Structure formats: structure tokens, C-alpha cells
Image (cartoon, rainbow, N blue to C red; front, side, top):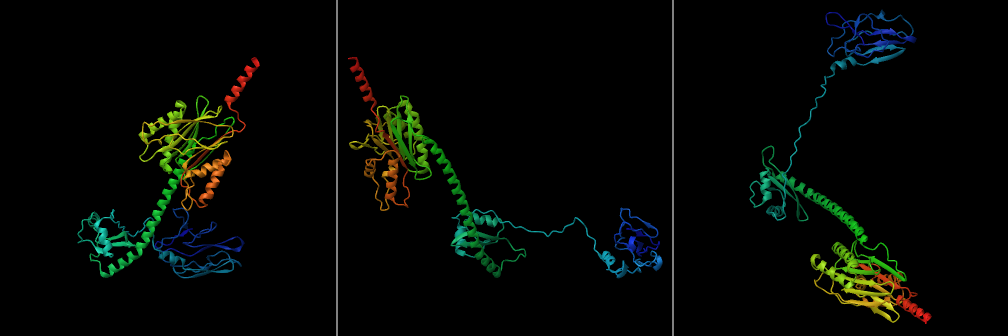
Length: 497
């Protein structure tokens, strides 16, 4: 845009310059308005030092004279005529391409626009008052005083042997409003002196007490929500830890059953909680025999699981070295007596099986008596011995038993026999013995025991203790190795004679 140079008297000509555009239309240039690129300035003009032409300053003088009417381009049907110059703020009407355009008071607005200073932002000052950090113990005298007052209290002259009161007074607190919900103090509104240096009026007290009546329940709800969220996070963390403990405990149990010719072995384990204190294992011995161990730690849950892990490790270490079940139990007892927690002990049965001859040697440390179904009826494998971890220096009696083809034994923990019905009747050892004598073996015997237990306790029964069941059966078609050897020797002697 071009700036028209006026006279030396300080006035500037504001007459618009027109130029005939192609097609009969005219371009219009005005001081303070953007000019089209093809607009040619009329008369002497100078460019703005900033590059593109710009309007004059807002305080420029008004236009003194207008250009003559014949200063426009040659007349034509679509030629634009030059409008008369008018003072600032007046309206100008001009004809462009046969249309009437009404120009508003743009120059007047530009002159009246206030100057804006960039980069300066006015921000209202803010005052944030923070109360004192207060640890209000439940036995603090201030708690009882506020509960009895149940309204706003002026503490400036209050005298109590209270650390909380002393902290509030040192912080400059003047008025304390207790937040009470369900008879409990859930918070405080603490106020300092008024800015007007006047005391709190009765209306102020009434307003604060009313505010406390609405704020206390809301604060109590917030506290309960936060408490429930914290408890939920704690339960989730405990459940996660228990799952990890369950995985670790399952690693102690045998991953596969022993493969013994002419023998069938089945096992079942179900803890009453996520982890338990029962255990069983099959420990191979150097002489080809196998040691069966079944144990039960007093109590349930994590404490029992920790003692179970320790006992299991001791048995795995002592079994292959000592071989004798009585010696193994004696060694483990001595080790547990040193470290086992008070009021805890372990019952354990150790049974060494010779899979060839069918003979077993066993010792019992206070565990439930195993039952064996034989052709003559149900036999009990009894041996005397104290539970492990109670007293040092104990000896454990060793007994033997000969398995005949078809015999089946059930090694079990007290979670089966000591389960209770809804009327508190105990399942009992006679029922377990009767189930063993009914005829099933292996997995069928274990399934029968669990089915009868479920019928006895009812559908909504909560398992009281860990349940461990191990079934050991000698195949009915098996022959005694000793008999085979004797028959072979007798046949050789008969042939040589």
C-alpha cells in the first residue's frame, strides 16, 4: 500500500487512487487498507521502510482536501468513479462493477483502537493457607475435649497437656472446628486469626459448625474408601504371594509316580487352603528299594507349609544315606527339635518297599495307621513312635509286612478320617477301614474315599484339613520272587538227580 505524501503542513491526502482493471473493473487503494498487487499509485508516493506499504499512524491528521472528480480513469460503462474524500468516521459509498459498496467507519475505528502491550499479563495474587502437620493420637486429651464440645472451639486460652494442642497454638491456629462422624473424630478445621483483626462472631461460629456437619460424613466416606482400597491391594498382594507359595510347594511333590513292575501306585493331595502342611514322596534307595513317606504338619496354611518344606528336605537327604526307616525318622526328629516353632510337630510314616519280594519295613512317627486289604481281611500296619520335633532322643520301632498278590494298602492323612458332617459327627477311622475292604484299588479306591467323604460332609462343606491319599497295590498276577527262586532251584536239583 502506498502512503500519499502531502504538504509540509502535516496534512496527508487520503483520496483513493483508482486504476482501471482488465474487463472494466477497477482496483481501489486506500490509506490504511491493503492494496491489490496490480494497484498503481497516483502521484508521488514513497514505500514504507518495513517493506509492504502500511497505513499511517492512528493519530494522523484528518484529510483536508479531495481529489478532483476527473482524476479517475477514462469514463466507461464499468469505470469506477472516485468518491469524495470525507473526514474520518464518515461513510463513503462508491460504485464498483455496477455494485454499491458501503464502507464503514474503518479509519475511525483504527484511530480509536487502544494500544496493546504484548507480553504483559496481569495475574491476581493468590493466597494458599496450609494447616500444620498434625499427628493426633487417639489418646490425646484434645480428642476427648473436642468430642465433648462438638462445636467450634477457641484454643487461644485452652490449657491441656496435649502435644497436638501445643502444635496448633504454635502454628498460630485460633479456632478449631471438629469434624465428627458416628461419634468419632475424623478431622479438624483449623483457622487462624481473621484478616480484619476482629474475633470470630456468633454467625461465623454457626456457619463453621454447619459446614463441619456436612464435611464430616463426606470425609468419613473418603477415609472408608481409601481404607477399602488399601485392604483390597493388600489382599491382592497376599493372594499373589500365596499363589507363588503354592507353585513352590507343588515342586516338592513327586512329578511322577514310581514305575514298579507288578505294582500299581496312585496318589492324591488336596490342601485345605492355598498351601498346606501335608506331603508325600517316593525316595529311591541305592539297593533298588523305594521309600514311601507320608507326613502331616500341625496347623494349616503358610506356617505348616514352611515346616513341611524343611521336613521334606531332611527326609530326602537322610533316606538314601540311612535307608532304615527307623533311623531316618530318628535323624529327622533330632534336626527338627532344634529349629521347629513351639507347639508344632510333624507326624510321618516311612515305609521301605522291596518291589521284588513284596516285603515292606516301616516305622511310624505318630501318623495315621495305614490299612491293607488282604485275603484274610483288612490289616493295620502299626509301629510305635512319637511325632517328629517334640522330644529329642526318640527311638522309632520298625515293623515288617509281606504283601501278597492282590493286597492293597492305603496310606492317608487325618484330613480324611477327622472330617466332620454338618451335625459334627466325625467320618472316623472305621469308615476308612471299611472303604479299604470294599475291594477297589488304586485310583478307584481314592475316588471311592472322596465320594463317600463328600456324601458325608454335604455339598457346602468347607474342608477342615489337608487330605493326602496314597494307594499301593501288588498285582494279583505277581509271583513271589522267593518262590520263583526256590522253584527254580528245586527244578535244577531234580534234573541233575
